[in-house]
Amino acid sequence: MSEGFRSTCLADVTARLVDHDWAFPRTHAEAIAAHWQDRIARSPGMFDGTVLLCCAHAVADGVARLDLFATRYSSFTYYRHIRHADPRIRNAFAAIVPWTADGAALLGEMGAHTANAGQLYFPCGTPDPDDVRGDSVDLAGSAARELAEETGLALPENADTAWIMLEGENQLAFLRPVRFTEPAATIAARIADHLRSEAEPELAALHSVRSAAEIDPARMPGFVRAYLATAFSPRT
Image (tube, rainbow, N blue to C red; front, side, top):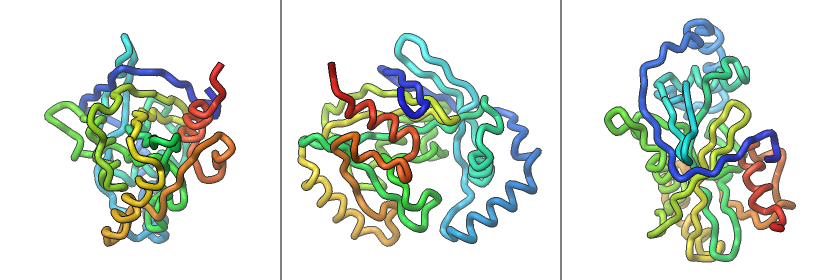
């Protein structure tokens, strides 16, 4: 797999919420607070809510099983900033990869007010308490929710349920490629209508990618580049 990511095809992904004593927020409390103040000075709309990170994962018989624990978003952003501070802790998230009937993959451009302004990737987000169902975490539901919130799209009936796990850069990206029945222009118009209806849309624009030549190393995160490079590679 290109971009330093390892790819694994999965039939399903399950996750549970666990208690985990993560020392990182205590050890780096002052640095976290300073980093957060710098972030919100640049992006005042950011909110220091609760997010779920992965402290353990395993794959067996085509199923990935994850243990997730709760922490503050400010701790997560600083942990991600200093990169690989604790290799046992992963940013695990799920995303729908929208494919159009005419062969385009759709990516959103993050708005100027967001934490990842200007970056291009599939609708996704780090899991949070809204995704918790008892002691389970609904990653499939998280992916569908992010898709709906960011684009206004609902999953088509009988959508493929297979997943691809991309592991690298301290991330576990669980991507669910879904083929929509409309061409890119039609879906783009629907998403544009949704964005105009939002007071502060998370996406600034929509981008369609139809070949590996359109992969943008400067604006696409590594997991997006890795997935697209494989998706558009010549089949033998």
